Length: 150
View 1 (cartoon, rainbow, N blue to C red):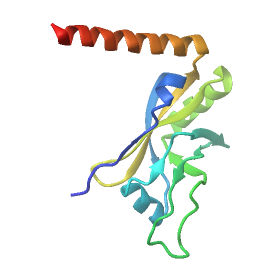
View 2 (tube, one colour):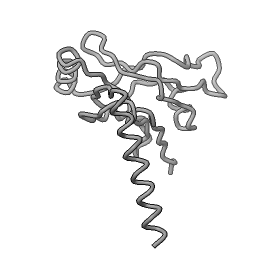
View 3 (cartoon, one colour):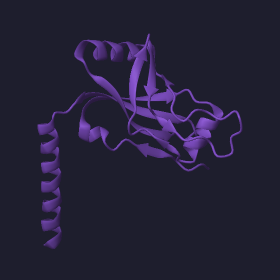
């Protein structure tokens, strides 16, 4: 039984307004999946981009495998995402027409041990939206403290 890996992009919900979510597979080499299973990956600065009709995740950092030889992978490289044609066409249309972006939210392994990526169609937040989010979070924290004291 393998332990489940769950690598999050914590800044995504703060910087972007999430419109729609998808789960995509990733095309990886042998040493990349071994590093992910060890938890040596980061998607904090990554984004998704179309090349033709294919979707790639860019700037995702998967650390080189410690026991890899000359077959080891590059730490930062483009990795192809696997989605249905219908989903890809819809995403491509939304990104081109509405000016939205695709951001990875979570890198995880499923019950079969395969690496998957949760991606979201997002719109960037303005500074006043970010301040509103911070204010709501602080108010919720204060209310929880008051409830706990009673």
